[in-house]
Amino acid sequence: MVTPEQLPQRAAAEVQAYRLVNSKFPPITLFDDVADADEFETLYQLQALSNPRLRNELGQLELIARHEIPFGIPGCAYATAPFTHVNPAGSRFSDGSYGVLYLAETLETALAEVRHHQDRYWSRIDGLNYERFVFRGLACQFDEAGMLDATILPASDPIHDPDDYAAARRLGRLARQAGHPGLRYRSVRDPGQDCWALMTPRPVRSIIQTVHFEMIWNGRISSVSAISAV
Image (tube, rainbow, N blue to C red; front, side, top):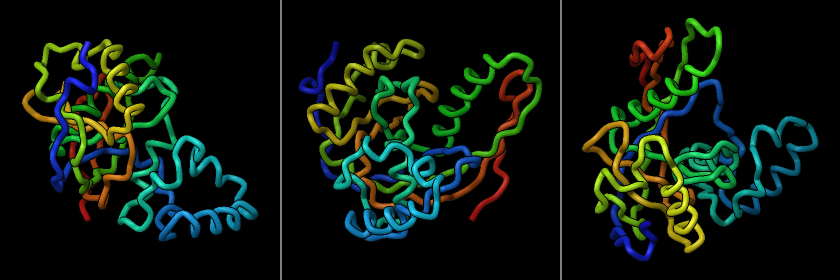
């Protein structure tokens, strides 16, 4: 199996990529209301006195060091949320014990990735005949410096396996432990395009809302359409 040492590192470059988040989860404004970690701690303590739901809104803050949070950027909450609201079931490059910020080369690729996972998830829900889901499209600017380049690996490599994430999770864990900011890899759901798995939000320069998408579930995701733009 491939290890981080076998992969080249990407040079510094400003990259734009895309992400979808479910609109039922509102952005957490506290991350965007402060300029640095000290201001965050002060405001957090003050708001915690009057907002008993604050911890649930912010997620598990202990999962990310304060110096890893890119305070002061546009959309800091969007950049940080995947690291404090971690899916315990895991993802391609995480076993569920830490967060990963996933980004796609195009909005179409982001849609293909999310559509696949929504299809797989909702197909397991008994009795669900029809549902409507709304997702918020995000555009993310980040610096690719130091990220591992797994696109040199063929699509047949185990880290790109469509269903078995064991090899990818091992690589993700090793990359994170070695301090790499993330990795670039081939999109599994949209062949020919790339995706990124950021192990920290620090490389993010901005992440802003672009458009909303509606997905219709009718035994499967039967349609996807843009419903608004900003």
